[in-house]
Amino acid sequence: MNSRPARLYRGTPRNLAFLARRLRAGELVAVPTETVYGLAANALDPRACEKIFRAKGRPTHDPLIVHIHALAQLAMLAETNDAARRLAKKFWPGPLTLVLPKKSAVPAIVTAGLPSVAIRMPRHPLMRRLLRLVGQPLAAPSANPFGYVSPTTAGHVRTGLGREIRFILDGGPTTIGLESTIVDVRDPRRPRLLRPGAISRAQIEAVLGQKLFSAGKHPRPRTPLPAPGLLARHYSPRTPLVLHKKIPAGRAAKSSAAEAWLFFAQPRGLSGPNIFCLDARGDAGRAARKLFGRLRTLDERGFKKIHAERAPGRGLAEAINDRLRRAAGNRG
Ligand code: TXA
Ligand code: MG
Image 1 (tube, rainbow, N blue to C red):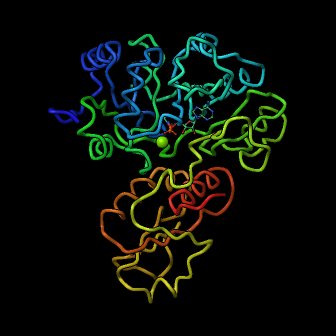
Image 2: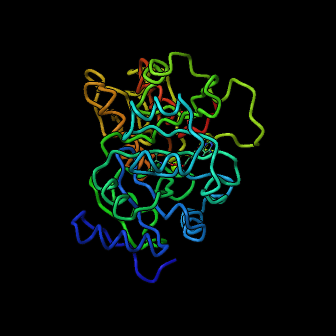
C-alpha cells in the first residue's frame, strides 16, 4: 500500500517523459491501450515485474503480456515464424497478442516460468509514445485487482488500484473495451485461439489460411495452466450474474426490483429502473466498449442478481459472450 494515492497524468510531452523515467527506474505505471488499461513495468526488469503481481494480488503462475512498439523488438524476445509474422504484419499495431517460444532476454517471472511469451504491439497513440520513450518492452496485464472486471477508464484503475500504485496515464476511455485476442502460434500448423477479442477468429483464419484450434477442445499442452486468463471467474463482478441466450421481456417486466436485466439491445416497450441494455440499437462494437463499465456500475448499485443476455452472431459477439460467461463464472 502507498502513502500517496495514485495520480492521473494527462498525456502531455512532459508527463510522458516523466512517466517513462519512472518506468525506467523500475516503477509501475498504469497505461491506456485501445483494449483495456494495463499495469506496466519494464519487461526486462524482474524486480519491477514482481511489483505488478503484488499490486494486483495476482498469482505468479499467471503470465504477463509484453508490449512492444517496433517489430525489431519481437525478434529480441521470441522465436518467430511465418504465421506470426503474417499476423503481426496484418494486425499490429492492434488488439492481437501472439504466444511464441520465448528467448532468454525475457525474465522467467514475466512468463510465469513458461517457455513461451505473449507479445502485443498496441495501437493507442499515448501508449506507443510512452513505449518509444522508455525504449524497453513493457510487461502489462490488465490494471485491475486480480479477478475483477478489467478497467476501461483511468477512473476504473484508480478505484481498483489507487492505493497500490502511484502513476496512471489517462488516455480517456478505451475504444475497444475488451482485452486483446490471444493466439498461440508456437506451432504454426496448429494455431490456437486462447482468448477471443476484437480481431475475430475469421479474420485470423483468413490470414493464416487455416482453421484455428480452440483452447479447450484440444489436448492440453505440458503446462497445468496453458492460458491462465481462462480461469473461470477472471472478469467477475461481485454480484452473481446469470447468462441468458435471450431474456424473455415478460419475465424481466414482472421481476423484483432487486434483480437487474441487462439486454443486449433496448427491448421494445420495456423500461424501468432495473432494465438496461448494452447498446440501444444492439451494435456489437458499441456494446463491447460499454460492457465492462456497465458491469461495474451494476455491481455498485447493489442488485442481488444481474441477468445478462448473450450477444447474437459471430465476430465480436464471440468475445463479448466469452467475457459474459466468465463474469457468470462458468467455464466453456
Ligand atoms: O488487451 C490486453 O491483452 C490487455 C492490455 C493491457 O494489453 N492485457 C491483458 O492482460 O488483458 P491480462 O490481464 O489478460 O493478462 C495476460 C494474459 C494471461 O492471463 C494469459 O491468459 C495470457 O495473457 N498469457 C500471457 N502469457 C502467456 C503465455 N506464455 N501463454 C499463454 N497465455 C499467456
Ligand atoms: Mg486481466
